[in-house]
View 1 (cartoon, rainbow, N blue to C red):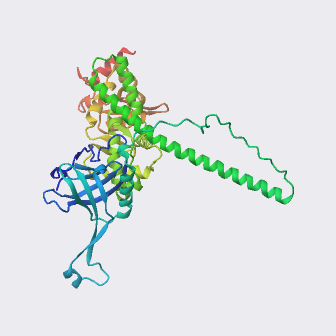
View 2 (view 1 turned 90 degrees about the vertical axis):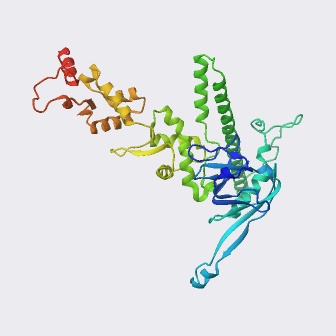
View 3 (view 1 turned 135 degrees about the horizontal axis):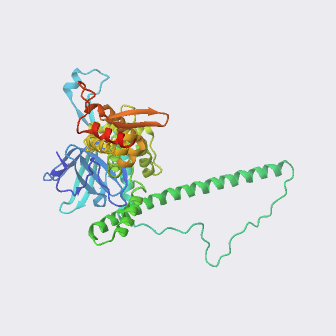
Length: 446
C-alpha cells in the first residue's frame, strides 16, 4: 500500500532519486527497510506496508519506494515509546515436515508508540520490523531523538575563543614551587610531570577537535539556510541588475559547495548504506552536472562529493559501487565508460549527437581545416576539461566524423574528407562540400 493512502499522517517530500527531503537542521539518524505501520486501536486509519523507515532528529519518515511517496510522523507527537516486542508466527504444518535444526517460526519486532496529533487525538500505533535488523539500536536512537527535542532547539551563539576569565578575577598563575631534580626520585617526578602535561595537551586537542566538528555541522546548517534564502530572493526579485545577480550566484555556488547537512553513513544506514549512498549521490551531482554541460569525470565527482561530506569521507570503492547501483533504480544520471577506460558520470538526457555537431562545426572552420583542432581547442569550445574533450574527439573519430594525426606535439583532429571523395573517381572535385572548402583553404595559404 502506497504512502498516499495513509492520509492521517502529514505528507513528506521526496527527491528525484527517492530520498526524503530533510528540513533545515534535520539530520538522519537511522534506517530500517521493510517496515509496516499498523494502527492498533482505530481500524479507520489506513496502515502502511513495506516501507523504508528513516529516523531523523525531527520525524519518522515512512517511504514507499515503488510509488516514491512518503509520510512523516513528527517526533513531537510521540507521547511514549514502548520497547521492542518480539512475536513468533508459528506454522504447525511447516514444523512437521521441517528438519529439527531449521527454524519453524518467523520472527518480527513491534515497537508500539502512543501518539497525540489532530485529528487522531490519542492513538497507539505499531512499527512492525519484518527484516533482520538491529531493532534495539534503532529503538535506542529513537529515544535519544525524542529526548533531544531537536525541533525546539535554536542555534546558540558561538562562544568566544579561548577560556573566559571571570569578571574581577585575576588570571591564575602557576605559583607552585618547583622542586630540584635530585636523585632517582627527582627523575621519576620529572617523568611523571612530563606524562601529565602530555595527557593534558592530548585531552585539550580532542576537546578542540570535537568543538570544531560540532561547529562545522552548525555552519553547514547555516549555509543551507542562507542558500535557501538566496533561492527565495532570486525568485521574487526580478529587477536586480546583472552585477547583483552575479554576486548572488557566486554566493549560492559557494554555499552549495559547503557540504551536505546529513550525509549517508554506514552507522545510520547499515545494510542500506550503498543503496542510500547512490541515491544521495544522484541528488548531489544534478547541479554540478548542469553547470558542467551534462558530463563530469568520475574523479572530479569524487573530490566534490567528499568535500561536501566534510568529515564523513568515502572510499573510491564505495563511490564506484554506489554509481553501479544506478542501473537498478530510476535516477536521472548514469555511469559511463569510454573505450579508453575513462569513467564519467553524465545525465541521461546528455546527447552525443549534440556534442558531435559542435565538434564538426569547430573542425570546419578555415583555420581548423588547415591546422586541425586539439583537445584543448575542443575543451574551450565545449566548456569541459581537456581529458573529457579528448574522449569526445576519439568518439567522433570512431563515428567517422574526424581523422586523427599523431605527432610529437600531440593529437590533432581534422574533418574526415574521405566522406566527400568519390571512390570511383578520386581525382574529381565536387563543387561543394567539405572537400571543396579544404581545397580553397589550402590554395589560399600558398
